[in-house]
Length: 236
Ligand SMILES: [Zn+2]
Image: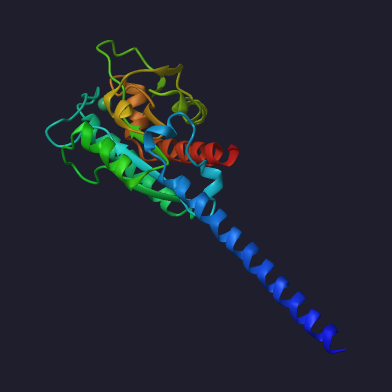
């Protein structure tokens, strides 16, 4: 009887030992997963980084970049308004929309009429480890009849984001679809996450400028971009 008792004691000890090993392995696995976040950002262009869907408990970091500002006014619209102002107005609307959604954490590269270097805009997104960067502009051309929506990306990892947001903007505004284009724009080239630059319409075209300066038009643009982001992250 005494022997049985000591065997039970040994079995209990072995069981406890096994439980401790299982807990140890689980903790180690969790640490491995977290260390994926420290992967060099350059690798994320190759799709090697942790996918947004895997960090579902954290909001997606959206860097909103209103183009131009301060001494750099951007293009002049057909009514004499500067591009930097309509860019900022749309960016602020998008910020407010995303702020209401717990799935997103928005940030802006400028919140007032300040000049910010392109390098600094990209660095802000990179240092913050933003999940995506959206640079907001308005198109311009000497021929006032030229019109339509264009969206740019630089690296392949930005193409799907560009496609989705572009389609949402075209559907929301009803402007001519001038397509998604790959371009070595500096703010896109220096950003290490999927990054796009949107040109919802031509501010040199009076009809498009009127929409882009109106509260209703800006709300539709902002909603289209927000819907695009929901679709982008939801599909991953
Ligand atoms: Zn611009």
